[in-house]
Image (tube, rainbow, N blue to C red; front, side):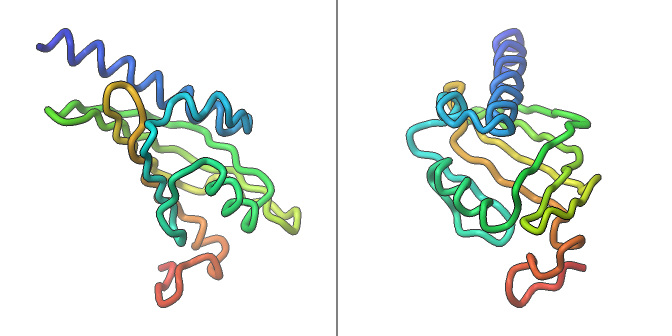
Length: 140
């Protein structure tokens, strides 16, 4: 069992890294290959989305470009799924062409059979752009 979990751990971490690289390159066709048919994509201040096209449309109303610098990727295997957690910083180009750098983020991925079934994103963008905080929530 341990060697199987180790193999899965390495493979799933590789899958998540490849997905993030494809998304950053805006290669949606490649990124979709890492997603299960039914996927939940959850971002701060947004409804749960079920497609990359929804994510791109939503993100396009907030910023021009985001790049991620990974500081770490952690992984655990449960009997039902594999969980990969990435953390690092974002560099953002906003719609008005101003930038924010070093914005902390955490992405949590759930994978089943090697495919992403859920992505949850947390970040500090509302601290650098308070109007991005969901209605009724203070960014602090």
